[in-house]
Length: 261
Image 1 (tube, rainbow, N blue to C red):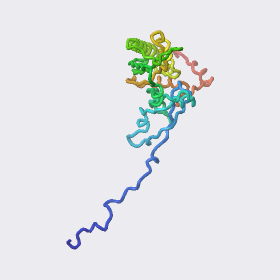
Image 2: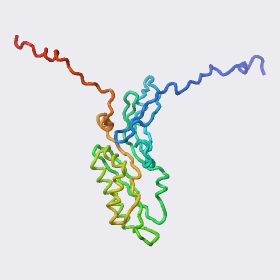
Image 3: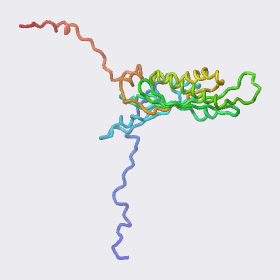
Image 4: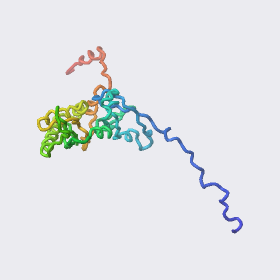
């Protein structure tokens, strides 16, 4: 090797090493607010990088989807623990993220616990449009039930009966969803009103049990409207001015102008 060559062996890497900065030092916590149809409004917190240059924090938060158990939204009521609600961030006000309903699903273990042998599983799905122009896809699930004092071990429905039941499911889901807006529809999902109605309507074809709206997807949402979102959040009021009373002497002083002078 030539003398004086390869001088860089002893030296370190070119350019000083960058100091590792803590990424969390540049982030802020925001509170997630659920719509007024749920009992618990303060759902949790979410992180976002602070506004820097053209990257605005609120833009990074909008359209985030949070998945929360309905039990947590209903004040820790464990009867609703098997339902997962999806909430989407629609607007940021101060340190609060206002969300709206964005779908519903069942936990896997609940669906597995319902499926058993010796009965017929009936499923139906339908695309519906609410009065406030949300397009939803609703999935319904139901199971045949053994009649009281039945001797036969199985309770299978005939394919013609299954078709009739499925038609009835679609009919009821469409009627319930198209007659109200999204907020009212969510209020129907929480106590499982639609499932009970399907159970009642199909009992003449074949008695059913465990009828649920298993899943709800939002396929298409209308253009963002702050007024509608505030309606959904009901009593929530921030950044709204307080009405001030005008002093009496000011209001009295105004009409004392001489006309045509």
